[in-house]
Image (cartoon, rainbow, N blue to C red):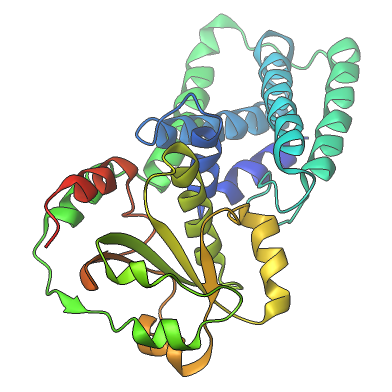
Length: 299
């Protein structure tokens, strides 16, 4: 059981962004607080795993904390199934082990049963007070580890949007003439838009799509558009994983896609009357800064 918790925490660290987005998606935590909550939760998983393996303070702390975290994730998974159905990867084991929300819920229920049995029949060891510093060391090291291993950066988005860019025109005629599935609106060449070029099989593109889906839900007025690359049969798995089908999108393949986006994925362009003012990655994409950019003067 301890190994499961340590493995679960470890694989969520890289990439950590999908786990951060989970808390924003719940609706009561903002983009700035989510990185701290995500790392604290990972730290709590590592703490539970360490205490279980060491067999320490089980009744006093470990069982209660483990049951509390499992109940929290069960509530989240039930909500996820109600809202979007049993599809995509729930993220319980990051991207290392793919599990649907229902599979993860069943896994958590089994773990809860095991913990209730352990709570009744297994005491573990209680450290004497003179060795309390050992517990303090375990608490501090496990809770701090996610912050040290994957530090938080909160000012990158504003700095990125304020830096000088070499503006260039994006020739969208290639998109209008060659896209399929949906015909891109000519209005993409007018005013401000955020256009994301993504491969449907790229894991980082899926992370970007998840983040942009949450941004879209929190503020539908932000003009987002997806240009997707890949075979038609990859579209359904892409949307089952990212739940981003409500964002306007089209498919563009081959040389036309590379002509606009290049070969590094994902590419996210902040476009002002066809001029690329910012070329961003999904980590730099910040809802508040995007809203400020949209309100600034249009060239």
